[in-house]
Image (cartoon, one colour):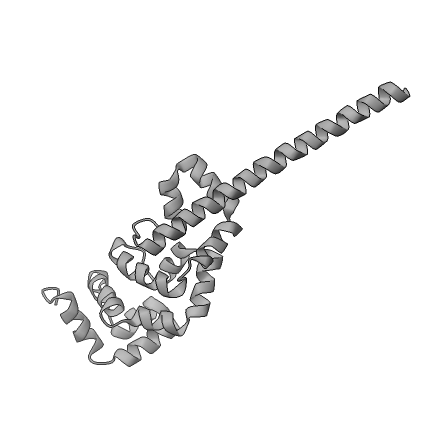
Length: 193
């Protein structure tokens, strides 16, 4: 059976039941689809699953049908969680994720909202582990498109702006604190308190 191409394996297991496969995938996810197709061998599943997602468009159909929910998932949990839930974490899915990202978050506003919500954690990752690790945390590692690049720049701008606001407010607090300490000392000296 493994001498067949991935497309032939997929056709064999689907046996023309693409609509039923979509329903199972929609309700039970990748594991349910694997069980529905009766695939126990992980090597076979590793060949069939990408074909079902890409060439038969199961993932694209799912994303169109559940766009608001999946876009919210990206905003709340990030792209890595989205990829993990749908078992599309490998580099072989990067092109598919690029396409889906442009469908689910065309302006990148969901990822920016995620970055704002998790800015402290993301800033610490950037400081301690570098931008490559930050890209990985955001789910951008291995992705490449004009849109991804623009969102990446916007996220970096957002993190830098947040950091600078914190520095400014921290300095302001220190200056205000110093002012009141000096004022207290002057009042003590001048009023004999």
